[in-house]
Amino acid sequence: MNKTIDINLDGCAFQVEEQAFEKLKSYLDTIKKRLGKSEEAEEILADIEARIAELFQYKCSGSTINLAVVEEIIETIGEPAEIVDEDEADETNQESNKTYSAPPPYYGRKGLYRDCDDRVFAGVCGGLGAYFDVDPLVFRIIAVVTALLSLGSPILIYIVLWIAMPEARTMEQRIRMRGGVTFKNVGDNIKQEYQAVSNKFRSYANKPNYKNMQQRMNKTGDAMATGLHSVLNVFGTILGIGIVLWSVLCIMIIVGVIVLKDAMPGLALSEGNFFITTVPDHFLSHLDQLLATIAVLLLVVIPFLVILYLGLKLIFRFKTNGKVIGMSALGLWLAGLVLLFFTGLRVAKSFSDSGSITETHQLQTTSAETVYLRVANNTTPVDQEYLADVDNLELSLADEQLLITGDPHINIIRGDDFSIKITKKARGLNDKAAEFNAVNTEYFWEQKDSVIYLDKIFNLGDEALMRKQKVYIDIEIPENKSLEVSPYLDRLIDNY
View: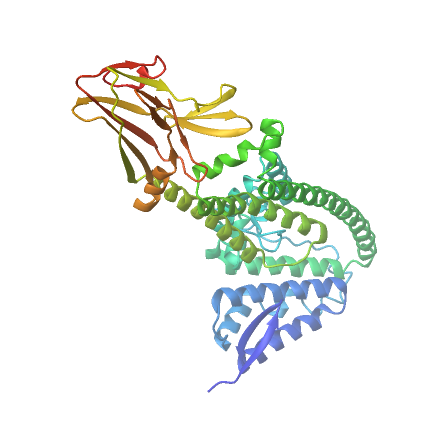
């Protein structure tokens, strides 16, 4: 049984066997001793540790690292003497004229990955920048600008790329993301990389004057980089503030429209008449309206919330689990889409079942030889404004009220009886709902001696949904009676 030790290398936790740990510790201590104490030496040592951590992840991801693996990696990278010679660190004059160069790396096929080491949200723009060798800031600006101009539609594209592009976790993936060395030559190229690092250190150690100049250049470069970084930070903060204000305004408008939906459409479309607000009550049930409202809120508000999150991230640069937030937002958005589809299916199904109700009335006998059909006095108001035709029903405005009317079908029957039969038909989500819509269809008629007054239209009641309502009127008149029909009603009679 081998004893294992938990170590942290370049921010990554590994479990190493005791012998392997001693070998690795001795290796790194020797390199550290040869490099000496300086900022450059610490950078080189940190780079070496980072490469060793990457090789550990590649070779022993999730498993214990044994001595054989450590020896293989040391052989791949090179012995301490191959990286930097202890004697050469003191021989400044003899080595000052030597130059070193690393062999060129072998370049392979690029791969598209998310760069989570350079990310604001999920690393998509960072990955695109690495793939196309362009500053990721360019893609971030393009994404934000297009999102603002198209009201958030690129957010869906970003989420799709987030799901489609894998995260560059291993060294091979990070190399392929930038089109660098392929992993089949990774051992040779890492060794070459460390040869170049060793050569760089030799040159640095053997040129004291160069060190001072390098320090001055580094300070100048650091100042320029700091200035550029500050400018970008200011620009990002301003852009973030703009995004936050714009997204908050849009969310407030959307929520305001939903909350004040009973007042705003009427004010906007009817100059103070609120009849428009009653239209949804005739097309959708209260449950369907609630489901549709929730679905629209999810579909419209979620993208703006994501944009708001990105704006806040640009301003405050906080660290969060972007993948969890993105997947949650996508899940809610898809839930809204499914809910809207389900509501549409419910509305479509509400036309599937038919219902009807029939009323038969015996008419009073009359001694007159002629029966008259006249238009009822309580007909539609003269002062009405036509709005639209929907499924053979007419929407109009009268006295600031929405009217939904239809033409009845009148059928004259000759026989021995004197009667009238009124049949109202409608559709609904089920038989009960269909019958309810039929019952709430209003039609007026009356008889005065030999005159039968008929309304030339039927109306939908306030609680009825528009579901293909129809009214059929069968009037049976004795054979010995003649019939006279008003000009306003003759067009409604099929057999006249």
